[in-house]
Length: 121
Length: 116
Image (cartoon, rainbow over all chains, first blue to last red):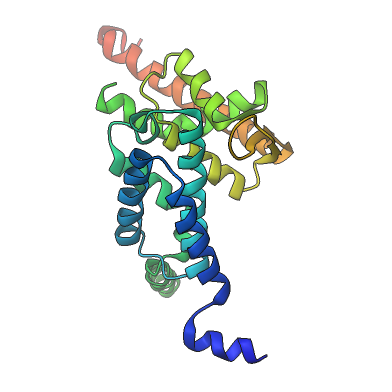
């Protein structure tokens, strides 16, 4: 109970724990893989516009799974992200669209057109 | 790969990956390697991974964590009943498209036969 209202002020404890774990995982990576994950993470932060903390963390954890595995297998960075890293990142982001703020506007647009089509009928 | 090829591949990659998994369950790295062997040389492992995350979210595959010699366990993906259904739909869509496109191709190459 107490934890509940404290979290409303400080943000979710669980999210913070996951964020710290994610950062710790990054530290274990070889330098070049860390550079890559930092670059991708930065882009996801800007381009993802994900407002839900847990969805955002899920995205980062899935990213860490990919990069960690690639580091262990010795897969070259270029083979992971391809010739167009932006395209890769955009494809990746699409999986987490549930958490994007734009969804509210998408729903609003859909509803508006439904309304207009109904009025016509 | 040309830009056109890349765009077309994007639209069909999901079906391609599901079809690959229908043959045999596999983990991400294996799937990418198999596709490369089959001539999809420029395919990025990350793109395949993003797709695997998506089909897992949508419940088209079952996932088993298998311990690996080195590093974290590997996620092995296998097609489930829902995935099989989805794959059937993919083949239907594919056949529809190829048939129509082939017809167009035939018509443009033999315009004189039009109206026969």
